[in-house]
Each structure stands twice: as structure tokens, then as C-alpha cells.
Image 1 (spheres, helix red, strand yellow):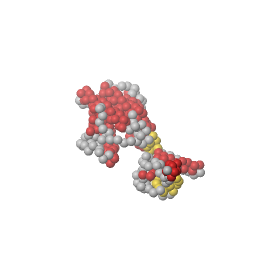
Image 2 (cartoon, one colour):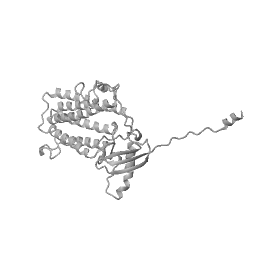
Image 3 (cartoon, helix red, strand yellow):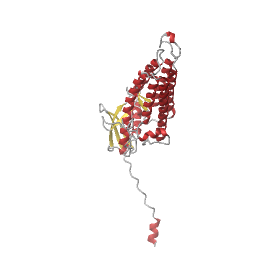
Image 4 (cartoon, helix red, strand yellow):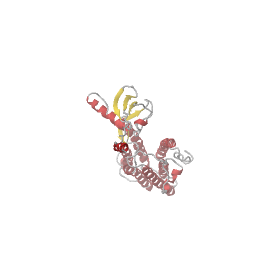
Length: 336
């Protein structure tokens, strides 16, 4: 009994804590293979995003002594191989195929700018530029036409539709879209603005020209075109709302988009990127409404670009989700 009582009085043995194995991270220049940074005692559950922040902080003091660019996290591309793909910010160090001394390769993505800023800039331009041609401000058409208005009602309707489209895009940028990537290269804003602003000026010049002639089939053609345009604008907005609801605020979570109770989203049964499908439909309607060659060319170029984007997203869905619906096409049901 005494022996049992003595055992019961003994304190339970303390559980030994597992020693945390810290990582050493070496970051090399992907081009020159020069060592840019060495991080000691990095926790195994650190993400690539956190490593980027550590790398940035370790380089900050160098700016005082040498000519060194500010490699803030959004500007960094961290890879396992010099020519490999960039790692995602949410990738965890201990889950990557590296040892306790990890070597990564760095590439400078160049100066970055937020997606919101890019969208607001590239969409505000067409809205303003088109209105300049619509009101026929001086130095665009011959002086006798300054601040005159067109006698064709389709010209005024086209202006309302064009303005509605870009106001919608601006509002969606501010209140609807949730971006998986916060920034893009600064140089892209010049390319994007040249595309949107240039085409807006080209289209507006001919649609609002004093010698513009209405579509061949008159009011019937214009009314049908207006219905197509408005239908597709509502559809495009519906898809953007559905996509927004898939991603919680501040998250980069990706899910398979499915139709909702909104009939405009039922096209998800057949298409991976119906927002592009509806966008194409809107510009086809606008082309039919104005019967203007520059508009048709803009629609064609836009269709080619959106097809490239849609195919890329479709491949990404197939790669990421094994149960992705097999009947879906990238942009056009059963065709493309």
C-alpha cells in the first residue's frame, strides 16, 4: 500500500516539446546567380509572401549605401528554378521540395501598380474620349460642326450605350470585383490605355461624324441590336456578381463556378468564362446598332483576346479541379 501511495504522489512526467527545425533561406539572382540575401532561422510554416517581406526588409538598409531598387513584395518573383514558374504567396516553406537550407531564385517584375488603378484609368478614358466626339468639341470636325448634334437618333442611343457600358465597368471595379492579384506591371497601363483609348477615339470619330449614315435596316435593326446589348450587359453583370460571391473578402480561394438561381448564370453549364461570352455579345449588339467598321474591328480584336484569356482560365480549371464539368467550353458553347 505504501508503495502504491508513493507512486500516486509522483508528479506526472512532463511531455517533451518537439524541437522546431528552423530553415535557412538563400535567395539568388535568377540571371547572375549572385547571392542577394540570406535569411537565418526562418520558421517552417512561413509562407512565400512572408519570405518576400523578410527579403524586402533585409534589403532596405542597402538603399542608404548602394544604388538598389526597392524590391517590395509585389515586385518580387520567387522561384525554385531560375527559369521556373513563380511560387504563390500562400505556398508554405515546409511543403515545398527543399531541404532545411532552401535556395530560391529572384526575378524583378518591375514597378507595379494596383489593378484597381489600372481599371479605373483604362475605363475612364473611353468614357471621356467618346463624349468629346459626341459633343463635337472644336478641332475634331470642321469648325461649322462645333458643338452641333446629330440628326440621327441612333447616334444618341449609341452614346448612351457606350457610356453605360464604361460607367458599369467603373462601378464594378470599385464595388464588385475581387482581385486574386493586387498588382500588375506598371508598363501594362500604357499598353491597356492605348488599346481602350485608341479604339474609343476611332469608333467615336465615325459614329459621331456629321456624315454618318444610320444602319441599312433602320429602326428594326437598331431595336434588335439594343435588346442584344442590354441582355448581354445584364448577363455580364450577373456573372461578375456570381464570381464575386465565390471568393470571400481578402481571400484568394478558387472554386468551381456553378449556375445560381439567376437565369443569366445558367450559361455556366456550358461555358467556363461566360463573362467574356456576354461581353462579346454586347459588342456584337453595338456593332449591329451602329453598323460601323471600327466597332466591328474592335469587337473582333476583343474576341481574339478574350478567347486567349478564356482558354487559359479553362485549362487552369481543368488542372486544379478533377471534378470540373466536362461539357464546358472556354467561351462559346460546343465551339470554342
